[in-house]
Image (cartoon, rainbow, N blue to C red; front, side, top):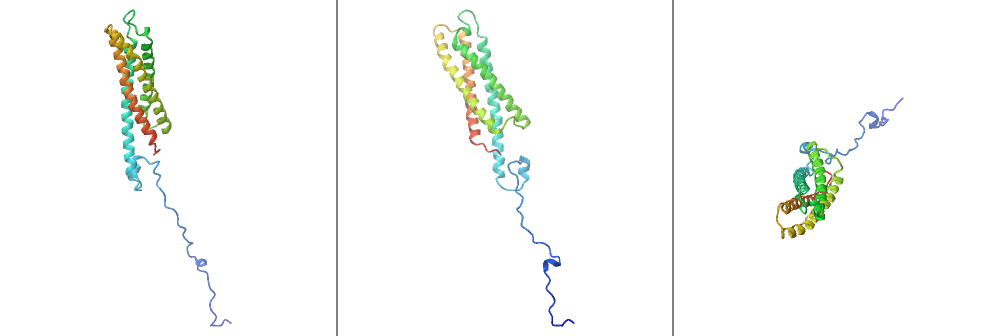
Length: 210
């Protein structure tokens, strides 16, 4: 017989059916880097969203400005090429008789091809929203290419201007006027590419990958 004074056996509370201990989990972190602008506005994370939006607007403005400058550089380079290639007015008044003017034509062709390819790529990226190459690779290619073409265009002007001024001292005619016009177009293309080199350098130095 059981004694009434005997204590009942102890039962483990976990064995009765109590819920298992809750392990704290880390709250989900919003993927800020891969958010689109619309997702960033509604994410509600509050972590630098306003700064990211401002950066996106600034980058969009730089892309549009770069495209406009590349279009201008293309037009000026093409005009320099056309004017110099058609500058033939008889013996002693043909551009291909002078080394400096042949150099003007060669650099104008290179500048036209370069600015045309770059304008096409930037227009495609701006219209489709997709990048043809990695962002840092594109910025580095723009920076190097813009600097090289700007240097070639300014060297073109510095080599052809003395010859043109010297010829104008003896004869000022359609040939010298056309040569001066081609050099002027090349110089304007240089100005556009020099500004583009500054913009490309800014993009390269402030690359954020966001």
